[in-house]
Image 1 (spheres, helix red, strand yellow):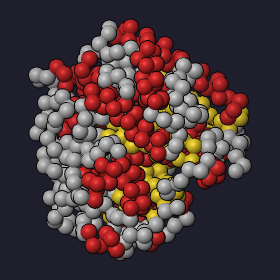
Image 2 (cartoon, rainbow over the protein chains, first blue to last red; image 1 turned 90 degrees about the vertical axis):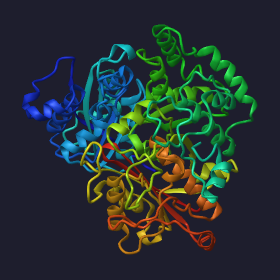
Image 3 (tube, helix red, strand yellow; image 1 turned 90 degrees about the horizontal axis):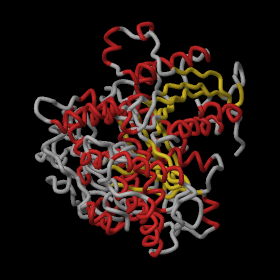
Image 4 (cartoon, helix red, strand yellow; image 1 turned 135 degrees about the vertical axis):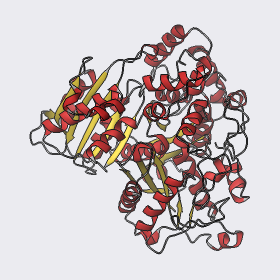
Amino acid sequence: MSLRPVYIRAIASLGAEDPDFRQLFSPLEARRMGRLLKRAVWTSRKALESAGLAMPDAIVTGTDFGSMIQSEAFLGALKQGGDATPRPTNFMQSTHNTIGSLIAIQLGCHGYNATYSHKGNSFRSALQDAWMQISLGDIDTALVGWFDEAFAPVGSTDKAVSVVLTASPEGAMGRYEDLLGTLLES
Amino acid sequence: MSAIGCGQAETLAALRERRSGIGPVKYLETSLRDFPVGEVKLSNAELAARTGAPDTWPRTTLLSILALQEALLQASLFPDGKAFSSAKKKADASLCPEGKAFSSAKKKADATENAFPSGKVESLQESLILVSGTTVGGMDLSERLYPAYSPWHSCGDSTDLAARFLGFSEATTLSTACSSAANAFIYAANLIRCGLAERVVAGGAESLSDYHLNGFNSLMILDREWCRPFDATRAGLNLGEGAAFLVLETEESALERGAKPLAVLSGWGNACDAFHQTASSENGEGAFLAMSKALKVAGLEPSQIDYVNAHGTGTPNNDASESMALRRIFGDCIPPVSSTKPYTGHTTSASGSIEAVFCLLALQHGFLPPQLNWKEADPACITPFCHSERSEESCEESFRHILSNAFGFGGNDTSFILSRV
């Protein structure tokens, strides 16, 4: 089978500093979402905006650990007992695919949606998934992200990167294989 | 590996004898003892003894190894049983036991991570990729070690332990909650279609944990009775556990090495309901799109599907939403549909691959797994296939295409089609 070339059209990322979330979220939304989710939606929106793409064909997410802060809150409540009741919100937001599915809900995107959680290889797997589907001609565009939060006990750090992959060279930053190395080091 | 058996022979017997594996909690350490569960009927020590792996490894990993060993042996990808004992020795030497201080455990885990894949156990004959699906990972150990985290807490670590133990050259992990294993099939199929691999082992594993039993309880979707998918009185799901893996390969590669294909993965579809983090939409949009895509990839009309293995968890919301999607796909001609969750409980991340094995057994042995524990029709739901020995025999040889559904939190919905060779 002949494979199509794949291009990177936009990249958006955040460092350890948070942006002003009020630009994107209502106070109610902002309260409901944890910081990891807000940062993920932020970079997703920014990447799509700079790619000039309203709706991707697929959303593929990598997260090395998911939300450890939510896991810790739920596990802590479970182990400490007493008045601490394990909260459904913590459980729900500790599921790794909560990030990718929230992006889909925010965009109203019914396309392909998957999440990889394989330590340092999570983002690489997510990119490979999107690359394969575009190469094979199954889809034309994909929004790929890497989201993690700093949590000392497992050695994770803050990470929020969103990338738009396309089959079309139009407006591209470059070929996928030429930019992959830089992306993985981001 | 599931509550109804370790290996295909036990699983087949239970399905044919209509035997459920759901019962009171026996092995899991939890305070929620009044919820029935579908446990694999082996302790961690017994699993470890069967696999040759240390009993201090995550239960998810131990279940994976046992299922992978069966799959690799059946596919003639494992030389012989001797490899297991030498694999065990090397694994013991390179991986530390539970109970040490967290920091030193973490350091060693990092060291072995860097050594992978060059430090792999040489037991497989060739380079082989493992694509697994899990969400719980090594949570069972983190529960025991609390407040420390197990060095194998994460999804990736629990997969890597199994991969390294058996000598896989590469591994990755899908984590889309209850559709994880089904999505592993898609990723594996695409690796093969792109020419990146000739064969890939794909599936999923999930052990029960106090964590997600409490999580599902906090969402109020557990039933205190035996689950009743599609029944008017259904009140929730029973959690289960297990692991299952399929060896996927191209027809050319199978023919070349004289392997006998069991079935064709003829279609797959992944779509997002994009409705709610834990609830399914009323019109079952995600499920409808996933099934539609799978039919399109397979080049099949809905009327060519002979049986649907439903996601059918037993929650009021899932079963109504899935029924709506089934009606949208099949109209008035809905093929036999059953949920096998009353046999195994909801094995969450592993359900896609465990149910794929049920479908393969059904295709090979010419029977449909009848649904258990359904009594009262619900106008909002399809009527599942529940009967009988006679009608099962009559459909022998006659069915060719089976569609299976696996839907996850966040509306991560996946369907795949298995067809007779």
